[in-house]
Length: 88
Image 1 (cartoon, one colour):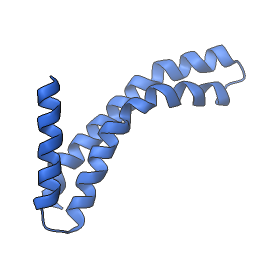
Image 2 (cartoon, helix red, strand yellow):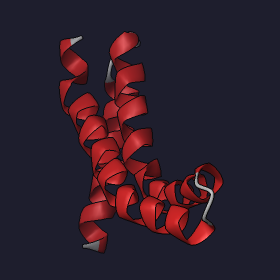
Image 3 (spheres, one colour):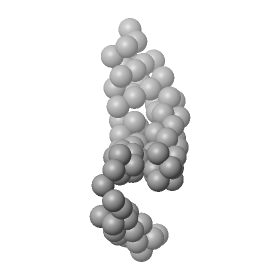
Image 4 (cartoon, rainbow, N blue to C red):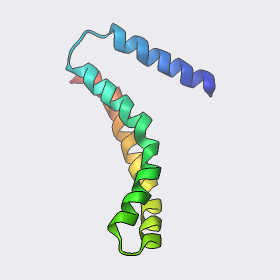
């Protein structure tokens, strides 16, 4: 798994440097950022839930239940951006 991750990062680095400079590179970069930052939803959503609700434990549980779905949404959106960046 570690080799696959390193190979993926190296491939993305080479691909980013070898692609001509146009707007599609921004889409590729944004897609990678979404995928890499998506686990942060597991921390941010429970905090937001506690701030929004009157009862802190209920807000924490609400955020804890919502966070995996928001994380998957960010991963999916990032992967779509990475796959479709040449077609912009």
